[in-house]
Length: 88
Image (cartoon, rainbow, N blue to C red):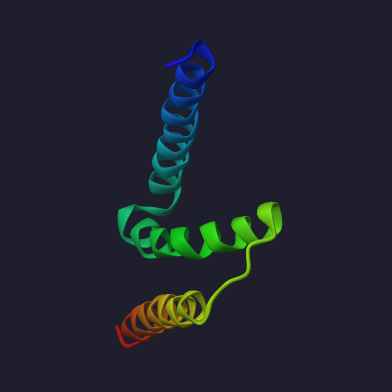
């Protein structure tokens, strides 16, 4: 292993994880764990969008199907939660 390889591995292991953990804790503190957990499902969708913008990746039909399923699940949970709050 070269020093450059070790530096890259350390960077990828520390910086993104540290920033991700901080953002997660910030979101939980602002939104609460229940709401933050619902939106955590968007991580794979965001990864595909970033790959498309940054690397010119082309999404496959599986990415599109997965994105639709994730979006439908989040919308369903939000609509159901809203309906329950309105019925109280």
